[in-house]
Image 1 (cartoon, rainbow, N blue to C red):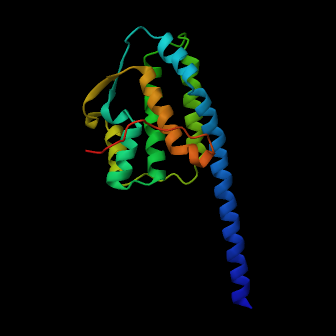
Image 2 (cartoon, one colour):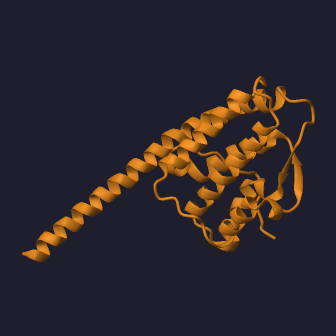
Image 3 (cartoon, one colour):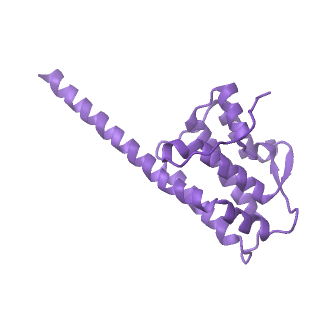
Length: 193
């Protein structure tokens, strides 16, 4: 009798845990969908290209340039989990948008756009109850980016290119979970060297 009762409680606990997980994912999908819409090409063109001088670049650390190819290589070479890649995506995206906003005046037409992006990214972090500092290569990358003296070499990037990468990686990491229409990530095969 006691075994049957504990089995029922365990089943109920599993169902409730599954429900909470699904609810958390769907809540994140709402915020991710909002971010996805904000990162549409029309907005990136308007706020990150048309409102900036021609060939304007921002100095960022090489590891802050998170491209689809980088994510693919992390998966293939280091067997990085999707959760760790999503945490890395959030960390890098948040840093990149902050870097872009740092060069803007409050009156700049792109200020409100970057503020909206930061608010959505912050809401995503707050809605993730099970955030754990990634270990392995992803943890190493995030640790290096947190230390000002250890960030490595800088790279000049256009603001639009940075958000283009953010958009593509967002689509790559979350389209299956959030049921977005998938598009081919790249026409070429990605090889890790």
